[in-house]
Image 1 (cartoon, rainbow, N blue to C red):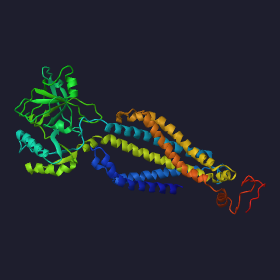
Image 2: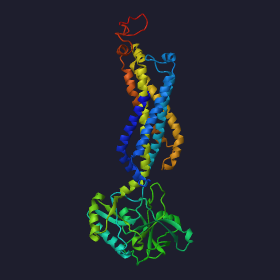
Image 3: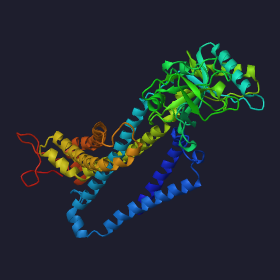
Length: 513
């Protein structure tokens, strides 16, 4: 028994390693890019040795226990408690039942957790980022400072945007830094004109640097005032556009359009000083979709040349299809200037939701594996039960018991064990799901719909796992069963009467050998 158990465990470990080789690349693609040491994830020698040692320990542990148990059985009690013509002992049944119930309970806990995280992922996808991400291409260029001064930077971007807008299929184009939901952010302190604050107490919030046409390109609503224009240059009045949450927080009782704020921002050409608020725009999710919107203000690139913005291009066609024309336009202006980090805004959003998606997938995989283990355990238990009770089932059918009754008996056994495991798993989930409450968004740790829907999955799997051995038991042929497995030389167990065929074990029936 020990050799058999170890061999099976090692074969299982080897099969798991082969599956891991094929699944590792897929899994790594779903991992958030900010996971530390992501590039080092691989199946190295340490992983291989660990997996095989764990398989060996598993085989030894689960092989020793039944071997020791069998070695301690008293022969007289064994013949009385079990045998080929009797069912297994009560203690053995209790152990088998307990393992199936435990597997089902653990599987349900993992399924409930994965259900909550999947619900969270769906809620995250339903969050309005405040802009239209569809059909938008982003690309990064970085004109070097040793060849472009501030004025040349502004002139280069303005001319490039006009050339890009002339590309067939392009609706509008602009540029911004940082890109919302890209994982990058920039915060700069400010105070309100007429209400100066000490340097250490100034308000600090997110700031974007943008070129004209940004709000039209991203389809960010303009609530009041105007957006940036080509006339907003370094020599003109410094301006700023604020978000609705900015206006509500810092100007709760007045219309801020026409008033001034003093950002701590200077590019060497436009000095730090008051900037006129010329417009109010809708809020956008700047950092993460799960975060609350934060007060934000926008500064025109022509008046804050402090870093290169990223191109934002809205198209009427597939955004990826304009990548080559975009590169050609940049090369026409500067052949030494590379275009890189080209992706769609849909890709940016996909990366923004990578963490909740990965958490949901990871727990779903664990939950599915646990569910399959419980299904295999239940199937094995019921199949073993049918083998043990073959003689009993054959006699029941021969004595006139309906086959549907036998079918119900086996199904009842499997579904009862599954129901007990589900009940225990639900009770455990009510406690353990609070641990992942910090990972949830828009979903409570006790979400009734998730609990109800998920709890039905183990019952369906249990029914399928129970149906095969139940059907096999219900279709047993009693004559064949008795003749082939239990009474060699037996020819017929059926006695004819007006009531039909029947079997009896005393001398009133002639059994022919």
